[in-house]
Length: 559
Image (cartoon, rainbow, N blue to C red):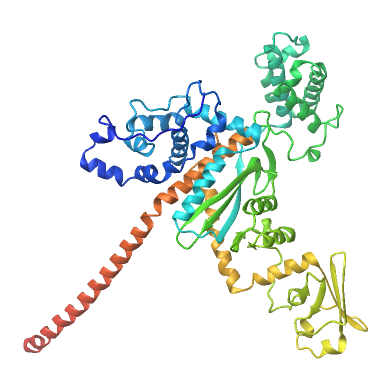
């Protein structure tokens, strides 16, 4: 299938939109479809996806790329299945208007169009490591950011655990599943013979008998039998074509991770978190963070101001990937910045090395909750000592007194101060000096000094105000779970999961972009109502007072 650019369709006499009444056309223009049609659809970069098609111009041309990508975006935005989104394109004029297909005699999306397009993107990602969907989503996010007037100087970052849709297996189930899958593969291969002793795995009810009808006392022996069968199969087919199959490679990986290299099973605690959890999702890993999780971890970076926010960067990795690694990745991705960026993060993203790297790129890393926070009122900390990190010297104490001598060895600063001078200082009792016979010693390693400085900043009012602004990004995991069912992705393996994750990120951005014109109108209406209420209140006060003045003489006459 060769690549052809989609030329936007012009309205024809048979255009379905021309059959709408004036009232219907007005409703269409005021719907989300108009915004998608005029702003978003033209943003889709068809050339980006040309790499997944053939160079042979004589082959059949592709379905319109921008329609495929647009359909995936709308499908995620409205949490639809493939069939539901195709039905919407066929029978909903809003979808046709959004995707510029109102003049098509027949809509250019069929039953397999979206799945075939995704498969081509998956394959390209596996071969090159390039995620075309991520590139497109982040390109749109950058365009949204500029249109919405977000300068990008304020950003916040958060991560979330994402469960795989694979079933959690016991150790016996895992070993049995790997053995059974390989045996079924061998059975289907015509040129390879399956030994008679393994044919019991093909019998109906064998799995239930081995796994679900096993007594606790028999569990150990059943597990040992299954692992011995796995090792036998591994040796039998080691030099055959079966060794190239995914099932054989997963069996080999399982044996390596579950045994000591021979036939002895490892203890449960000795099995690594990145070991195989389920052969149906070999990329999923195990992590205990806020509960046990088998799957992945997503990371989002949000640019924001007082009125708007947009997710400008995202990533998805195995769930053993740390927040600190995400921080390093995003710093590398953003690169050197002309204007300083404030990046508000959780304390898990922070380390001295990462903070230095961020500073070199003009990024100010602001952690929100580091352990051991203290107040300066209670203690004058080491962060108040004047240290020259380029010269590696301690220049003065918080009171401005210079040390008698200063040194820096193996990352540790040492400075000796005159005792007579120190004893005259009003803060001497609170100073973190080590009192010695001749001289007082100040000593701190470089890492502790940086952490102390950060903790000191946390006690300033300016820092507290910045920290408060991080709460917005913490709502994204909740939205992804409640609205977009992120823990039940209909795909397995990390590449597929990341592409689906990216489309759900786009859904959030799309809805925020659509709402950007609604929020100011709502605020304006609220302001108008508020002003009207004030005017009514003034009117009532003035007129009630006038009425009382008129009734005053009548009251005395009545008496």
